[in-house]
Image 1 (spheres, rainbow over the protein chains, first blue to last red):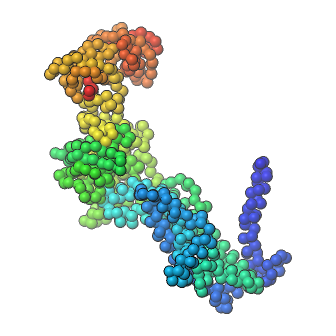
Image 2: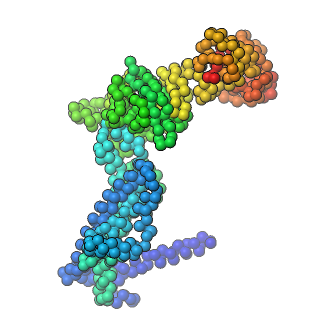
Image 3: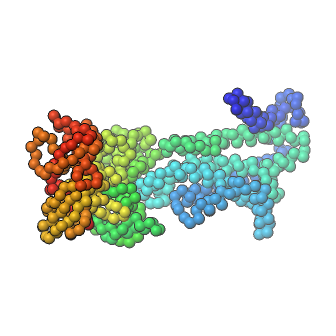
Length: 270
Length: 362
């Protein structure tokens, strides 16, 4: 392929990827309930509507989502720290197999995970609630956390921890004073990414959320009412901007961590 | 006074036998080196002393105290790591002061004085505020030294501390480490695979192969009287000649050396003892010489032919083929004034002295 056609290919690819997302803000500011061109003129009333008192169900779903995403981020990052540390620092029997199984949800079809979890939760009499959504989200977020934290822990020279221990500190103080500060950028990056994943996850939340819908589930239910669609567009615009900000922050933290440890960047999610 | 005693130290990693029955006494104030190729167990032995590895069997005693169940943070040892292990998120002064966190008796001023003294000692005065990642390799090395020495350990352990430095800097650090050791009087244990480094710096050297100590001696004895062919070939260059011990009765040791003929050796030349039978002898390149016509040295002469010439500037190394030996011998000659360099293929006479022969373990 010549350089010219490669450039065209790259352009078409990016348009396909981002044009639909670009439509979100366009129609969010469009003064009309029908999502179609031509545009009807600018307005901010969908945003006003979004924050209006009669959108309580929407507000509740946002709060549900924030609760789920926050708890998911904390739990999956904690699990990720333990797993990543074990994987990088110790050798144990069947290590590769165990790590492989932990990472599997990364490629498992979410619908399968969702349905199996639903069956299990129903059968053990747990019912479904925001807590079951959190469990499902922890399951799918943990592999991402491990992937991020693995690189943080791998970049840590084991001799650095030994040096602190050798200089008289206990194992716990060594972890607190040396290890934690050095992997902190990775931890923050892991918190932010799992938060983002949980926030916009739909399938598991749809199956496991019961009477308290998360935001994506609520949005889906609103698609039946065409006149609400522009409000969804407004919300979507806010979410996209928020997600981009969070991801930029996460990546900045990861690179800052590498720089501080004086290491070369070997790639990450971004 | 003995500072460290190792008795029957064994270390297994699963099936791998890393240390095999190590018995060792290291004196207080000694500069001691563990020398050997990679994988010989020297670093494992050092880490055993530091407390990073448990022994499978045997005992480690430091300054009269048995070290079983004493973790690394409570041992009177400090370590300089191969990677230096500078804490990247702390500046130079914070790195050096790290070990003082446990010293609750010190106030901030006393602490600063100690840190400044330690930095001064390693030639880094005024570097306290520098960020760790803004240091060169040599400076990191010095910070690691200051950080370990500030705690006044009884033993300083150095794990290949100079291997990451370039040649010039390494030579400079070698003499500086030696000076530092004399100044503080602490027992230093250096792990290295560089035989020259071990010879230059150490009071005594233990040469290790495959988890065992092959020979423990001072540098001169180690170089001049290696106990086995393996030690002789590992340290410097050594010509190995097949030989047969004809008589070994008390101090009378008669040996027939291939290419050189019959010689009488003293017991001193047989560090592993002698008994009749086939074996090898070793002779160093600088103890043999090309016999130039105008020199007046004495010694035995033998005919040879130059096979290879390597000119090093200050020295020339010749590979010379002698009669009745399979491999040519290497001879090093100083390039003195008026001395010419022989060409390949030239016939020459080789001067040698039986006092420089050493009989290897049979």
